Amino acid sequence: MSKKMLKRTGVAVLSMAMLLSMGALAATSASATSASAVDMTAETVTIANTYGGTYDVYKVLDATVAAGGLTYTYDFATGFSSAACGYTVAQIAAVDASNASDMKALADALVRDSADATPVNGATPIDAGGTISLTPGYYLITCAGGTQMTVAPTLISVRSDTTTGTVTPKTSSLTLDKYITGVAQGTAAQVVGTTDGEAKPNSAQAAVGNVVSYAIEAKTPKYAPTVTTLTGSYQIVDTPSAGLTYVANSIVVYCDINGNGTFEDATEKIYYHDGTDAHYVTFGDPAANIVTVSGTTVTFDNDFILANQDKAVKVTLDTTVNANAVTVENTNQAVLNYNNDYYEGSDTDSLTDIVKVYAAKLEITKTFSDNPASGSYPIAGFTLYKDSIDAANVVATASTTASDNTLTFNELAAGIYILVETTVPDGYVKADNVTFTLAANKTGTEYNGTYVLLSATGAAMDATNKIVTSTVSNVKGATLPGTGGIGTIIFTVGGASIVLLAGVMFVLYMRKRKAEEE
Image 1 (tube, rainbow, N blue to C red):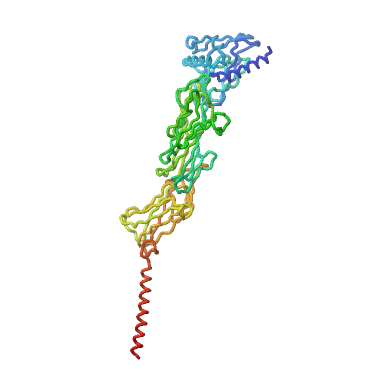
Image 2: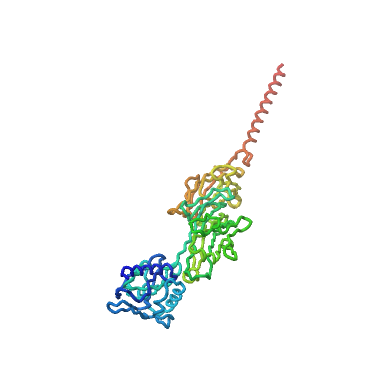
């Protein structure tokens, strides 16, 4: 066999090992002989930056060769021994890299034995994407940390007649992305809020009564072929803040079972509730529910996760902005819990993503021209409209009291508001209408929870607390007819009556005088 063909054979074996070995980052032929001479020339090995992290490299077997020799001779390197790991040199060299169970058993044994060994890279682990120069021998590569899921330990063979090149970690990575899909009217008459306009918005501004809809997208883990059970759960937990109320039974769960990158197939909608009953797509034999939904927690069946590794999942749900919404950010947090050991299907970790909803508050201070003391404030009533003064556009109504001359309209979305005094205190002139135009500020592309007052009459903006403040005054004096005071009608009628009476008396007087003269 030619040297060229032998190298090709080595590359083919390496590729097969990378694809089929549960425990290998990369592996080469374990053959101890070659048709051409081998030597002790060091090779540069690169650890691919596929999943990040840092790595330690341990030399398990030393290789030696006579000058011009065709065969390596192996022996345990310092820190490893047959007694400790349970394998002989020949057994290590003979393990079939394509046999996941055998590779797992060997890697487990070597990892246990490595406790007494010193990494060839010294005290500083190698960063993903980094390189190391290795002389011929067998090496164990372990993850020192920094990866989302535990990386499988790896045994590689370095030879002068076979290029190892780049080795790729065997593990998987997960994703979690929560975003806002829209803000709707809901049941309250309010200005409808809006999202920040990004493709997958992380922020929105809204009003009490608005319905905010969310989507949570994640990815299922990929485990080693030998993993047949999981010790924990793949679970998505959504937690709205006190200012957001989960809309009961609004959760819908999807899984891209077909792997086509969409959730359109009917079988991929694996849970929904029609308001009366929950509906599931069943899985397995005997049939079992793919997911269990409790409140806003979605727990996936472990067998389903193992059967659908490295697949996209999606959860959608709705919340309503409630009266508890405060003038700071109202968060909605999603947490993904999962088994993070690629090699074992055990241990647990989590990912978190948060989106935010903001709103402004309107505070009105009612003043009076004669400055009455607290406890004797005249009572005034107001109606807040959106866009225009129309019965269909009423946002809220509120009144002052004898001891409190302030009004608060909680949690408004950006928009145009008109404040109208609808109950005028006796003896005062009706206050002028006040129009507010609120706009929400952004930092970069996301709403930051502050608002700006674009236009208003007698108003100011407290940006820190997202509060619009305004002073509305009533002037002491005659009120217009029909607003609660007696107005000027009585005086007009009275004056007209006096004039009429005087005219009648004058006519009677002139007739009497004329009669006397005759």
